[in-house]
Amino acid sequence: NFMALGNETRGLAGGGEPATNAVNYVLFASEGNGADFGDLSVARAGNTGLANSTRGVVAGGEAPSFSNVMDYVTIATIGNFADFGDLQTAKSMLGQGFGSTTRGIFGGGIAPGKQNEIDYITIGSTGNGTDFGDLTAAKGQGFAGVSSSTRGVWMGGDDPDAAVDVIEYITIDSTGNATDFGDLTTARSRQSGASNSIRGICAGGDSSGKLNIIDYITIASTGDATDFGDLIAATALHHGASNGHGGLS
Image 1 (cartoon, one colour):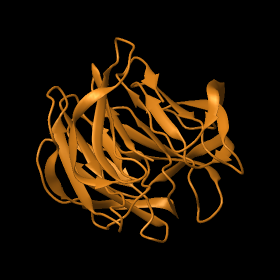
Image 2: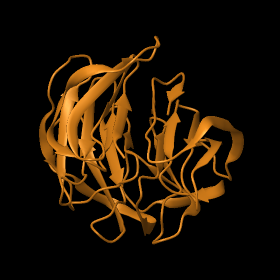
Image 3: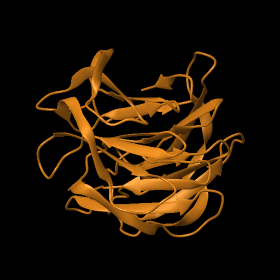
């Protein structure tokens, strides 16, 4: 499991199993191999990330013990990440992070039991995570997250030991507990998400075996997910990133 994040032009991916500090980047508008970007401040696996148009933030993981580290970088540059602050709890396998132009959100994870807490940060500053509220249930295993500028949605996960089909949402610029949104077409954990401001997708994952399923939702509404199509191969423990017009998973 590793983090992925991006702005309108560039996508970054870093960390992984075994624990590493390596970060690569790609240009969304082109095709080709990833290139070296720099290093995370701490080598780790099971981390997650989020971004606005200028800055990316990576949180949590295992190095090899559970980590509360958050680090950040300016996406348009190339170089190493710097310390941002700490999560409320040291943990790994959080849900995919998301945010608005000003605020970032991290939720769930394993520490070592499943967690329900949600942290928020101000992306343009530095500092520790602050309590936002709770997920509808404690869960981990790197579940999918997508957002518009106002609403964030998490899909699936492991609650506590079996894959679930739960979709839940929050209003990013408020605080409070997550609310039920609907259900995925199939219960799963270890899947990835990507979105533009209107539609979010949930791709792949694991439910007694790896899956190639892609679902989609309309972020501003509530309701069950709809079949989008299939990945080219069944896969899990991956992350997705988008420039707002398309996604990579």
